[in-house]
Image (tube, rainbow, N blue to C red; front, top):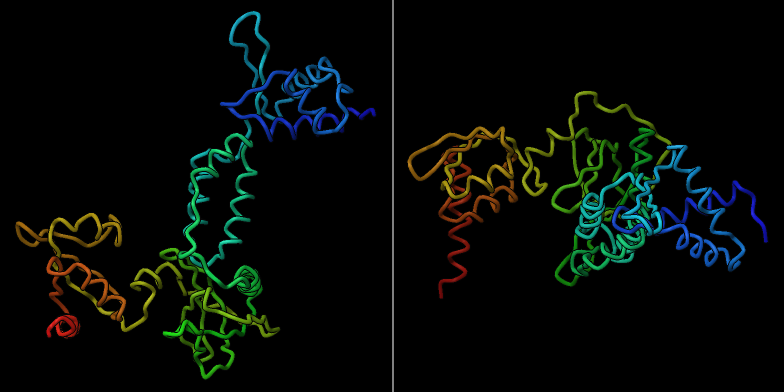
Length: 330
């Protein structure tokens, strides 16, 4: 069976992309064998033809092929050097997918297999051997990928959406809020936070709300359009929330032990309003939504964090601490 030059070039490019990289180079003989195996026509493609096409591809510089020769008497080797992503970048993407609580285990495997196709087979194998998917961190909501698709389009087209939303009870059954009725929302943004995916938008009462995507069901995009608030800033909205809990926004002053400086900078960034308080502590000033999420976040630092202001927040923390202590008093 004979092939046109254009067909041969495409097959050659496919083999180079699939099997070669900077650490895995192949000679024209090895490439010829792979082509023959792939096409199911052993020995019909001549090595000298492959060599000629390799040199031609190399001269075009539109498909980045590199060639080198270690020393005299050994064959020239070739590899594809035009990949869009570095290996460490692919690893970061794969780790992000693995930790995404919104995705099912099956969806994670599917997406990871697609990411692996962005590099050579030898490097893809190396990546696969280092990735482990935890069943606990995976969603059981198989429809979530379709919900994301519809919500994304609704945001772009500025169309109102309807959906059911709920939380799990002690029997692991989902209980829908809003009396089990469909919610209506003007979708503004999708936001990733602590390995969870959130939908942010304005409800029919004009309030900004957010919802975990994995707890959403039966998304419907309506034909009703809306105009997004031009002053809404999704980043500013989420920065004030702790663990995505909402509440009244107040200015806080919290004293922390010096040993917590790095966790606090991780949470608030290098631009955080921080100053030394005394020899052993520093003071953080910040604006935040007062919520159960914030109280829990402060309490997790135990005696190494103290709210200075406002007083009512300090009292909430005292009350919660007393409740915790009472659980252990027999």
